[in-house]
Image 1 (spheres, rainbow, N blue to C red):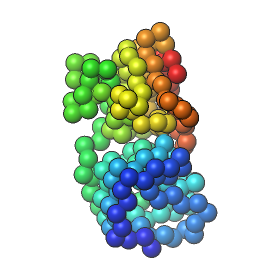
Image 2: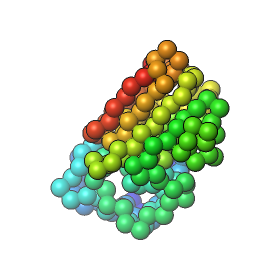
Image 3: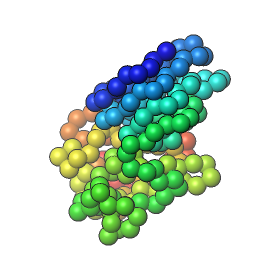
Image 4: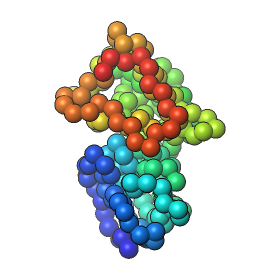
Length: 193
């Protein structure tokens, strides 16, 4: 049992707050709070595979929706009933925009109301096999000084489309820029990396 804990500010390349590897089929992860964790492979809950029966994770509080592979990965590994989401509402099957002059307080739904950061957009959108999400990134340089978190995860059924490799650049100071774990159905186009 993992219960009544506060997981805040954890960073890892493979599961930010809780990472389950070769665990028994039954683990109860209940009534915890997850905030400001980062990993390209499930910032809050992560497992090395999808178990025969999903791990139980009821009544937890998340700053990013547990429906998002940014927050909980891989999709289908955890059952998260009665989750409380304290962050922005998830955007299912959405097309959103990111621009150098954008603002993460915007709705991201038009070029004029674009988000500022690719990482922020990826936290919000949730694609599925029925309808993909699309993140359109405008001209500019997207890096740590501009607020990006690296490496950026390639999420399932989420297309990441830059304005063109001549004028749209994603630049990490060091290490990986993009990481794909458990990603099914994504595309990446139009960037200088």
